[in-house]
Image (cartoon, rainbow, N blue to C red):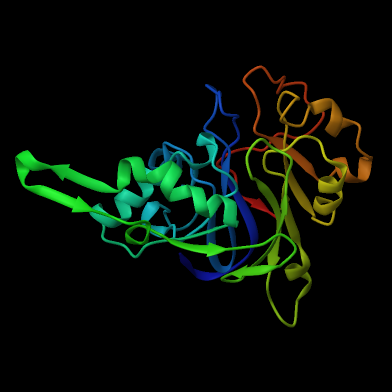
Length: 264
């Protein structure tokens, strides 16, 4: 989507729960800046999430406005809404295919191992329907690489792989403006799903606002690990991807508030 007026760098979290949450929608967000809007991941129920959590914006946002999706990995709580969003855009509103920006490993598996089972065909002999579809009927893929900054409209992203059971990446993003006014130097960082990784913290530390996942240890980052960081880094961090049993009331780290627009 191209927004109607120039915006500073902003982030709208749509959900902050983990894969098993009954208290919140799964973690995803919208990054806005300049005239660009980019959805980060696409969990279900995406239409309800957008209707409830994006109503703080001056212009209502729905699936018809999601032209760019940054897809961080293929766990269901991060990509389970793609089928519904893509079907809606093609068959309900006949919108152009959105662009999915992602790394090669994710792109290679997205259609053949995730979406094709339900989207590759409509075969109903009783009604005379017999249609076959390809990935290109629903979306465009743009390959991105760690270490190679890239633009999505007015937003300049840098990604970094994380340590997770499936290929996954976090990112930093800022406005791309030349010459750069002071506001364009502001940067947002998102850890995505990862074990605690000092090198990833260093990558994110250049950002002015950081959303960091915080779940049970193992394949995620534990609260105690983030709490042990330096005060300088902690002051930038807001936590999300929370389990239901996370002690939200007594957290020493601010908790990301879905449906609230964060100015970076």
